[in-house]
Each structure stands twice: as structure tokens, then as C-alpha cells.
Length: 415
Image 1: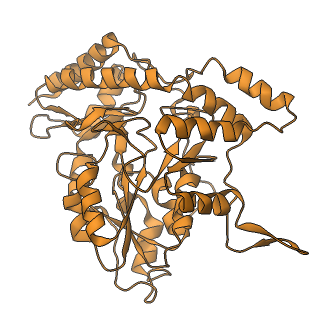
Image 2 (image 1 turned 120 degrees about the vertical axis):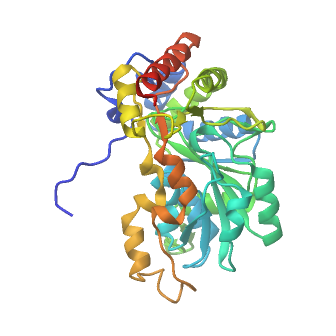
Image 3 (image 1 turned 120 degrees about the horizontal axis):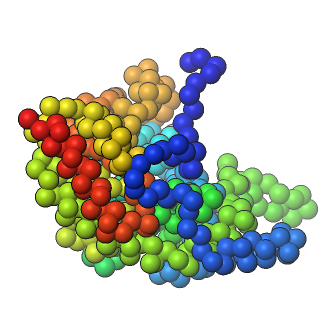
């Protein structure tokens, strides 16, 4: 790799310069108490307990016993991975359509991610797609609620219970989504959240882990906040395990606390608007919006999207997305890069060359990563168009405009 590469951008920088006729999440709507909480941090001389206050408030809102605040979603999931203390070469089942942050912690702990395919016509995995991937080395299932759509968790939990497996959740795009009236993030042993600026409950950065398991929560704090450090009499600090300093900064906690205070109406507006938008898109021949399952009682949508029928149009999904973006659908594009087996060439190389932990031992079989290992997900993303600028600023007229733009592009390219 050359010394100079085009580095990925995140947050406001990722959408800077985007043009279109629809709302943009930036500048973000900030809770009215943010400045007061930030002032408290400064006036306290950095002695404020604002991180603890955020943890307590978020745990109460989620209805769980523990919230452990982190600097972001990637550290949250990495801390969880380390707290489980599986063995190198152990397997974790993960959705193939997600972000690198979902699997970063698994890779650093020398676990082996195994990507189950998605269910047909959806963006998420299911119990049916997980089952063929299970082996005697499987230790956990990490579900990803992509775009805010919750995986069908009851069958997944039933499958895991029969095999004695842990189930935990990546809720980075699904804060306060509900599954059969239960909050995403309370449907497994633990869950990781994101409060990065582009996410639904956007702070400057930030994330957390929630759980009802007292022992797991203490281990997460020990490893993730205290770096695995403990005090030894007549000596001082020793490090019993390799840990992290994944503590949420005080200023981030202040903003996150203010954002928590306005999140419910934010999510309710997203839920109303994405359902309206999905209905409008479904009326366009050749266009299929992301299906919203009946069990999804609240859809905290972070990303809107639809699929095109390739037999109905004389253009590719890339061309369709480019035309839609030019016509005003802010941020429209394809999302092939979400297919993790294809988006992680370093993992492909390690598996192919039997680099630890893919050596035998600790691995007990060979692995391969490519788009072809998850053909359903690959095929879905080939015709899928999304825009991550969908936000709480949408009103019915914006949904109508978005559908109108999609219809215009569809009609212009229809066979």
C-alpha cells in the first residue's frame, strides 16, 4: 500500500459538500441542556460526575441495570469482545452486512468472525441463515440491526439457547427501535450503542454497552475503563489482564445526556416518516423499499433505502443512484462496502495464508472470506440504494419529494 491513500471520512466530514433537495442531519439538533451540562464540566474543574449521570440516565431509559459509557461504538463492541474472554480461534457468528466497527474487537481478540448470510429480501441475518454456520467452536451470535431494522430475535435466541451460545447486539443504527414492544439492546445478554455525531442520538462521538448481567458489567468496567488494572497492597497498580482506557470523555457525556433528553420525539418522528416513505416508494413499479417487519413496533430508522428490479430498468443501481442524487436525493448511493466478507481484504489474506488465529491450532478448520461466501447478501446489495442523510428533520413533504425523485428516475430508465 502506498504511503498516501484516500482515507475514509466520518461524521460531518463525510457529508460535507453533499447537495440535494432533502434535509441533511447537519447541523445536528442539540438538546437544550447541552450548554448547561458542558458548563458544569468546566466549572467543576473536570471533577464532574457527568459520565456516571449519563450512564444512570441511559440505563433508566433502557430499563436495564447497567450502562458502561465508551468513546464510541467500536470501543463499546471491542470491550464486550474482550470481556467475554473466549479462546483464540473461537467463532462468533456475525451479520455480513455491517460496518468494520462491528468486528474490530473480535479480530483484536483473535476470535474468528463467521459471516452468516442475510435472509432473502432483507438486510439482516436470521435464525435460518445462522444455523448452518454453527460448529463446536461457535461461542456467540452478534446480531446487527442494520438501518434500525431489528433482527427477528426470538428465533435467534431460541436457537442460541439450544446450543448454549451467547447472543448480543450491535444497536449502533437502532437506538430505541422496538421489537414486539421490547427495546433493541435488551434482547440479548448485552448490546453496544453508538452516539457518534451522524447517528440517531448523535453526540460529538460516544457509545456505550448495556447489560443486566452484574458480573459482565463489572468485567467490562475492569477491562474497558480500568485497563485491567487493580491495586496490590504495598506495591500499587498491577495489570491482571490486557485492558483498555475506553472511557467516555466528560464533554461527550454532557452532550450525550442532553441528546438523551430529546431522543424519544426524534425516534418517533423517524418512525412515522420512514413508514410513510416506504408506502410511497412501494407504489413505484420496480422499486421495493426495505421491508418493515410486522414485529417492528418502532423503527428508529437511521438510513432509508430501496431495491430496484434490474429487469425493469436499463440502468445499473449505481447509475440509478447517481441520477437520483443529481435530481436531489441527498446522499443517494449504493452500499456494497457494507458486505464485510468482501470489504476486509486483510482478513481474506490472513485466512488464506493461515495467519494466526487461522493457523491450526488455534483454528480447527480452514476459512475463506469473499462476496461469494454470502451470495444472498451480495445479490441484495447489488440492487440496493440507500441514503444515510435520512433524519428526524423529515416531514411528509420531504417523503413525498423523495418518492417523486425516485419515480422520475425510475420512469426515465424504465424498459
